[in-house]
Image (cartoon, rainbow, N blue to C red; front, side, top):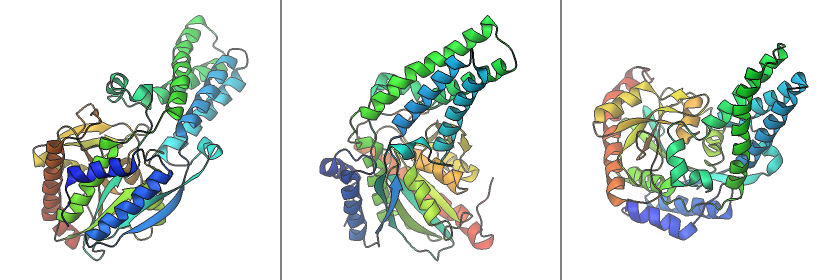
Length: 380
């Protein structure tokens, strides 16, 4: 069997449509993709996990908590500061993957990863990752908003507003109650008031078909699994579920396989939105905290010549892997501001494939021998 990347992406969208985290469509797509991997002559298995996908509604609750706390802080500074601090901590724990917080109260769903192991006795392991689910729409997902927000990250203004309100509450605790403080505190409070309906709008909006985000990445992962044949790396495939629930599929995979994943010999190549544009690679990932991608992988991508770096300000699968201490980088066709369209373009898919194959060849030639001799990836 030969994988046609464009046709494979279209088949995933046409066959299963919107694939919300933990939905029946996501489960059927996972079974289908396991079958496609087996048709390539690979073993494939489904690994189930629990997901809590309602993060938009949870964060709307956090926004409301902070708004109330900001209002109360004028007359009851201790109570107000406590409410805002709770909103900050609940949001930070949630987005960083440290702990699922308010989402636990809003419904659990069964999701699954598709895992296909290659040669696990090779000196190194190359994990091709792409998420198979798709996300919701809403006003902030429209092109006019999305292009403005991607440069700084759609989550950054929200968390920044929470932090600024909390700082103002701390100043009030110190006994300051001047007009200038009320003016400063008013601005992020208004931002949170605006964020509240936008988050609710996202929570009730329809799930998107996800042609580019991320049927394109899934199709490219299948194509690379077929074509990539490094000598010193075993090629593994991980198609994650519930990435749109703050990368829960990748986090679940890392937890389930922490005893067998050699973090010093494993490279994660995350494929996300590779369907339209030219190849780009991440230099940093995540909103707060933002993590630097593995420097050796960034250098190899830069030496590839055709790609350009960008900062990915959302909690991707690459970010989740890097948070767990694994060498990881995301390949995408977003531009240097992190923006791309929803459509599929055959030439873009071909360019992304060529970029990834060249990167894998460089990885095998430069990093592979070092793994044989030293048993670890360089941090330079």
